[in-house]
Length: 158
Length: 158
Image (cartoon, rainbow over all chains, first blue to last red; front, side, top):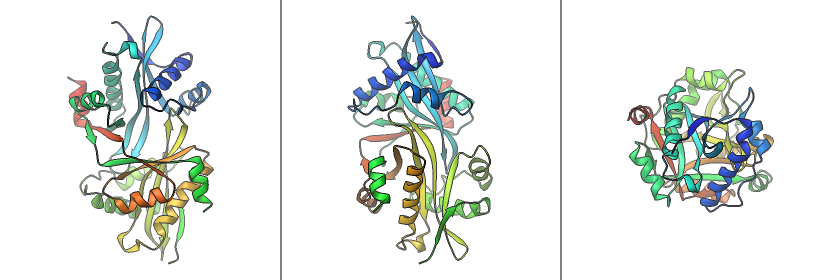
C-alpha cells in the first residue's frame, strides 16, 4: 500500500469531515458532529490557525487523518494534544494509522513539547493495546468532565 | 469570607505556582511540576497569551486560582478547557472554589463556546459529586493517554 502523509489543505476538508463523522459513528455518537467544513477552514488555516491536520492520501483520495493542537500543562508546559486519528474502515491494517501516529509523535518532538496526549475509549482494546505497545501510558483514574451550553446557562443563572 | 475574583497579573504568578504545586501534591504527584514562574509568564501574558488565569484574592493574598485555555473539538468546534482549579487547603469550604468555578463557566459562555471540559480523579468523590450537581457530565469510559519525551524519542527512532 503506497500512500503519502502530508499537511491538510483547504480542499481536503470535506473528506476530513467525512472521516470525523466516520470516527464519531464508530464511537457510538453518530449525531454528535456539529462542525462544518467552514468551521474547520476557519479554525485550521490562516495566521491564527488553531490546529494542524495531517492527511494520508492514496490515489488522490484522503483515507486517513490526524488532527492536533497545543495545550498547556501547569506541570509540563506546552503539550501536543491529538484530538482525532482516523483511518477509513477499508484502509485499516495497511499501516496508514501507524504512519499517521508516527507523524504526530515526530511533530510533537519537532515542536519541543515534553508530552503528547489524547483520549481513548476504554472498550477500544486494539487501540489501547497499540498505544501501550508504542510506549504511551493509559491513565485509568482520570475521568473527563464536560458541561454543554444548555447546562452552562442553567448553572450560571442558578 | 470576602474575596475578589479577578484576572491574574504577572505579580501573582509565584503564588499561582504555589497553588499548582499544592494541587499536584493533593493529586499524589508532588514531583510532577516542572513549570517555572517564567514559563507561566511567557505562556499567559502578551499578545500570544495561550491561557487565561483567574485568581481569588483576600487580604492581598492569592488563595485560589483557575486556569483555562481553548481547545478544538472536531464535533463541537472551539471549547474551553479548565486545566486547574485550586483553593488553598485553609480556604476550602468558604465558597471560593464555587466562585472560581462559576467564573470559568461564565467566561466559557462569554467566549461563545459550546462546551467546557476538564478532568477529575475518579477517587476525588467530593469533586465528582460537585461537578455532577452543577450539571456537568462525568464520562467514565474515556481514558487519558500520555507519551512523555523519552518515550516519544524511543518510539520515533524504533
